[in-house]
Image (cartoon, helix red, strand yellow):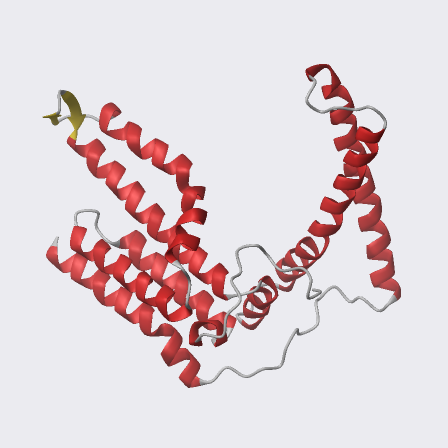
Length: 254
């Protein structure tokens, strides 16, 4: 992975969260999401505790709240689904401002909304503090299958190449009088997409042959030899331990 292939969700910084080994952050985020998902939906106070915990982690990482909020719109489709549930759920129903709302639907909407939001916030926090290359390093250290690492590495490495090829093809079409705003030119656009697929496939074949000629053995080399210490694990898993304590509280009080 070249240095120029950074993802737009990464927010450079020098905080303690940024400096943690990636595998520690991946495990901590995974455990936190598991705690959120398994918490009973009636434990309203526990979900507030999760939000406070995530806010503390983001503050420690120096992530501005506005930066997170602007990127949280990715969960908009789930919000739409949650809004519909109170109107389509079953009995019993309650009256609110002249609307007949389903109690199970309200709880279901709350469950989807709060858990989806917490999952998105956790993922964004991980992405903001961990470059994609480090995510791959963490997956490698966690013994993720080598084939998965290879596919992810090559995908991330060449997505910019394919995007650049698509931009060049688009400019070439426009310079020849193509205007994608007109509906009757959709055929040319579709043919361009097909040509982009063929070019990408051919480029992939050439890259594979070049890799084989350089001794490719089917597995990515180790990207780093840095050592993760017990102190890293203690610091990184501290938020996950708090999340587990909150989850246990939710299980015991419902």
